[in-house]
Amino acid sequence: MVSAPFGEPRRSIPLREYTTWKVGGPAEWFAEPGDQEELIAHAAWAAGTGVPFRCIGAGSNLLIADAGLAGLTLCNRRLQGSRLDPDQGWVEAEAGEPIPTLARKAARSGLRGLEWAVGIPGTVGGAVVMNAGAQGGCTAEWLHSVRVLDPRRPKVPFELPASALDFAYRHSRLQEEPLLVLSARFRLEAGHDPAAVTARTSANLQSRTSTQPYQQPSCGSVFRNPEPLKAGRLIEALGLKGVSIGEAQVSPIHANFIVNTGAATAADIDALIRLVQERVLAARGIELHPEVKRLGF
Image (cartoon, rainbow, N blue to C red; front, top):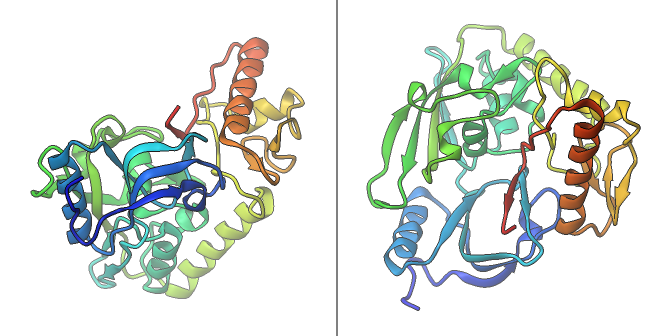
């Protein structure tokens, strides 16, 4: 294989160390770029040598197969950093910046708009791709633009306005197109009392941690809500809290969470997801759609 920039990617790296579910087989090739330049160079190398590749962030919305992934897996969680303008409300953040970290920084600067994001265990890039949201807020409301990379032309990053991303509930155009988010720009409300915004942010976190299984490995919410209904309530009403396959379990705390109680496999989790879907469809005629993205299945 042709030598890669910044050193050859590592081989056979267990991806369970890079997902919040703590499951997943090895990446054939793995790299964790330290900045955008390095990520772009690795993407160009993969494109030039025909190696398939994908980019992951905090691994909080991923189910990676036990057999692992062929090709190159790029992890952007080292691409952190942000710049805030407390007077104008502009916030720019790298794709690997944890969205809770950005929410706290914004609150301390008196910027309103990201209070809902404090309990979401993902990155800015992942939040953009998934149109992440919670407690009445979502990414699409506050995003101004994104800087992206097209793997087919990996040396030429470009900007896309939020209006071009086809945002919908837990959906964006970036889920269908192979564009990699490098950074994002938000326009928040400036001029608020930092103490008040920080208090609301902390209250949102307390609300989530008191009602969700934050002490066990999970991916966050497994299923999209079939609005106006709530997935968790549908699952709970069928008595599925606590149901297990292997060491994967529907959380007894919140039914829209599947937790790894010890040594669950990706196959265990996948089977439990399908079981819940089958039970809800049979009982209520409602097809639950996962938020989680499966890789390698």
